[in-house]
Image 1 (cartoon, rainbow, N blue to C red):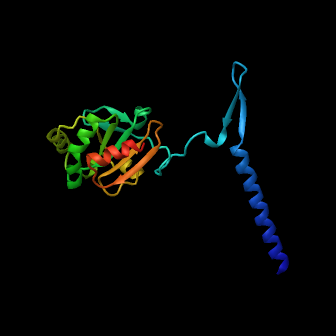
Image 2 (cartoon, rainbow, N blue to C red):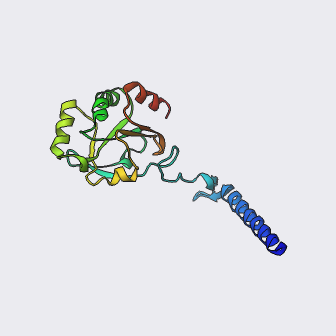
Image 3 (cartoon, rainbow, N blue to C red):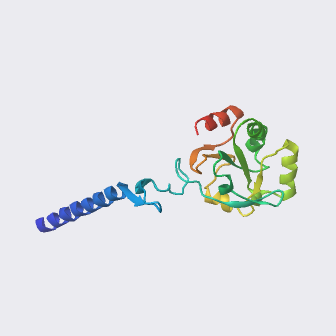
Length: 189
């Protein structure tokens, strides 16, 4: 029995040492030679953020069609601050925040991408009528099969995701937002 305990402890210690060695090696600074012969330091631990839904992670890219029939991707807006808002016409809180979203898009330096959960709508015409009623000028994207809403694990609507210029998630807001909260989230980016 003692023999197995010692073997188990040795295996754990060996595993820990191997993990520690690999972790430190990944974080070391490596030097690379450019075409001009210059030495450049590069930290391999900070190469690229993982794609995910948590703050600091790269926002998952997507491509959807707009109400006008054009295709738009999140990656088209790299270099700009973006607010992705998931919404539906039948949602009272979504209806309540739309005037503030329009004001926010007009007054602040941010791109709004309003992703409509089109599969839950009675018709695309109803979405167009809604956009016309509120005078919405930002892109309305049609998530016809809920693929983007599923990718972003959206529940409930509205949900807003703020993405910084590098394409990383800055914050996620569940529920209705007013203009002041939108500005606050923008300032925190």
